[in-house]
Amino acid sequence: MRLRVFRAARMAEAMAECRQVLGPDALILSTRRTATGVEVTAALEPAEEPPPLPPPLPAVPDLLARHNIPAPLRAQIGNGQAEAVARALRFGTLPDGMERPLALIGPPGAGKTLSCAKLATRMVLNRAAPLVVTADSQRAGAVEQIAAFTRVLGVTLAMAGTGAQLASALARRKAGQPMLLDTAGCDPFDPAQAEQLLALLRVTDAAPVLVLPAGLDAEEAAETARAFAALGARHMLPTRLDGARRLGGVLAAAFAGPLTLTEAGTGSGAADGLTPLTPAWLAERLHGLARPAQEAA
Image 1 (cartoon, rainbow, N blue to C red):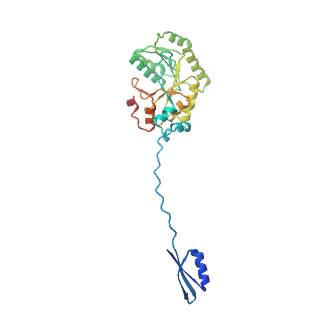
Image 2 (cartoon, rainbow, N blue to C red; image 1 turned 90 degrees about the horizontal axis):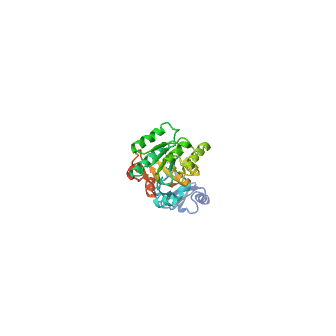
């Protein structure tokens, strides 16, 4: 309760001051005359305070925000559950390289040569020794790198830096033998490099698979995927998923192509470094729940 005492020469003046200060709801408790006039004691009941608001609910963490997934794709996959991922992206298997050669294409340093070695190793283990052709004569040590793998595997390696060499390599292919083509790194936005890769694919009638490393900026990865899709890529084999913590680049590339996600490079070993990509496995990775990729394989 708020108490005030008002003094004035006349009662009317004291009451006017009371109403001005305390308002019309003031309660007059007493009045008395004094030597100088009158004294009015008044009180005002405090207004009822509204009940306290409930504490705010704790914010729900956005577990997918750290992956930097583009907004159009994020709208489709929602909270990243496997069912939504399966609806938003394409999943499938790699071409087997038997009916048509399997060409690994992509930007420089994407992991094409190591991926080629992994696929060749698996084919050998499945008793289908491939013909391996390398067209990467530009990068220092590229031929030596793939040659080291093919020597261990005991498979034939052909070098095709020119059209004539490529024709010779194709002639050495046995009926029904799978063929893997390791291409040089290509900048798909450079017309000369893009045309050179297209010529290679036309001569071999190869099925191009985009090899793209994880961890790229999502927008950059999407633009790169669209450019390689324009060159004929329909499948994608992302690499370095054993070390990548953000998958926005991989998902953005597959969505933008659009490209079918097949397998992922998940380690440096040639014998056990490929993991089949499934909606469930990707959903677990998006939420940070998947086991290390090498174990998941």
